Length: 87
Image 1 (cartoon, rainbow, N blue to C red):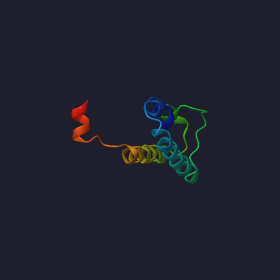
Image 2 (cartoon, one colour; image 1 turned 135 degrees about the vertical axis):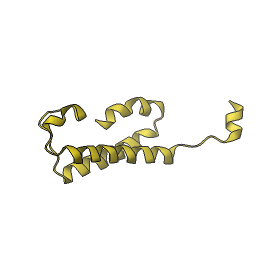
Image 3 (cartoon, rainbow, N blue to C red; image 1 turned 90 degrees about the vertical axis):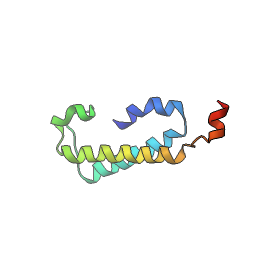
Image 4 (cartoon, one colour; image 1 turned 30 degrees about the vertical axis):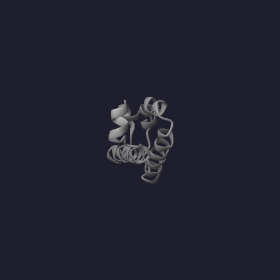
């Protein structure tokens, strides 16, 4: 579900797409290794009643978001004072 919220940000800057891909992959691998299953075909946090392991799911979601955010910070270039003054 994290990739759905990433679409507006990815559209803003194409460098963000690989960041979200890596974050989603990390969350997916973690959920697979922990054996998290959801009986509903889709719904993310809205179907917590259908999950077998709720707390690990939220841990995976937070870690995936943190990985994506960290990579975005790494690939984003901070504007210098000269660049800000030129705007």
